[in-house]
Image 1 (cartoon, rainbow, N blue to C red):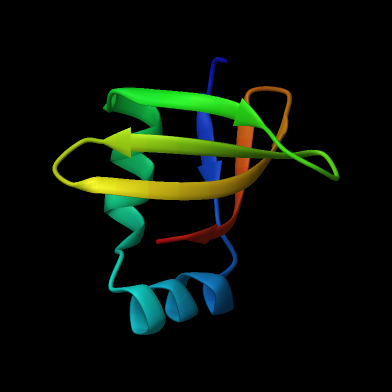
Image 2 (cartoon, rainbow, N blue to C red):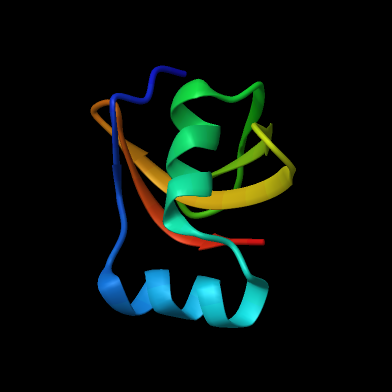
Length: 73
């Protein structure tokens, strides 16, 4: 899976930071530069397990090399 761009809505970014303590930069670096495993999930969603600086699970939708973040923990 090739990811060239990572998108996230501002309210989702805030929720992920407050609830799970995960910064957007960690998500972005994990998807673009980390050692990631990708899996397809239900309803056009994908899951990435990444370990850029720490282990993070990322749920996102994928369309034309663009990942739109749903959640991360």
